[in-house]
Length: 128
Image (cartoon, rainbow, N blue to C red):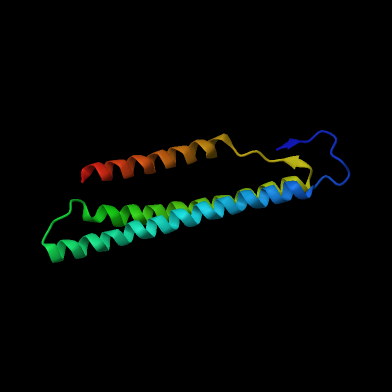
């Protein structure tokens, strides 16, 4: 956290607090999207199973959809928890007249996770 030079007497501005809340809501929205997407992917495994029984067709990697769906839901929970932690840290820093930066490792880890999810989706789509 870096100290802001010569903060005014009433440093906590409503714009800073509202921006922090909007960021938190973006984390919540992203977390819910991951969880919902995970649910849809996991349910697709059930659809694959039903189709394979009715049409007597075998889909490769039946368990892949369920596993990937659960993984996506877990990523959503982690994103929601991280957003809550970031909101609290930033709020505390704003009240002290300081700025709380996101650690570079968090941005790098988030990028790696998103890239891994994209690669997994692409590989699964190419398998069919």
